[in-house]
Image (cartoon, rainbow, N blue to C red):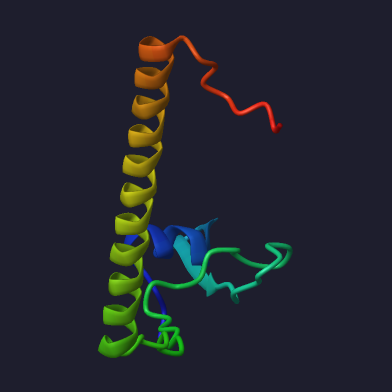
Amino acid sequence: YMIKTGHAGQVYTDVAVRHVLMRQGVIGIKVAIMLPHDPKGVQGPKIPLDDVVTILEPKEEPSPESILQAQQAAEAAAAAAAQAALQQQLLAQQQAEMAAAGGAPAVDAGF
């Protein structure tokens, strides 16, 4: 088949028209050549035709169990981080209270 319309028709076809004037009238010829697809773009168009279908392998779909386990692990990690932050805050608060109440150093000297 020959592509004649659209952008692919402009890119993939090479058209030439010639007229010859003779005594009895004009003779004309029109030739259209469809170029082959060339991935390098040397001897033909680089872009593929619109009707070329490429079938890709389907992606591996994760199972619902693994998704659920990942969500639970993320929730557990977030809860542990929140618990650690709360403990750090309480420890800092206790140290501040001890420093304000007794004037003792808040950091243990290691003696």
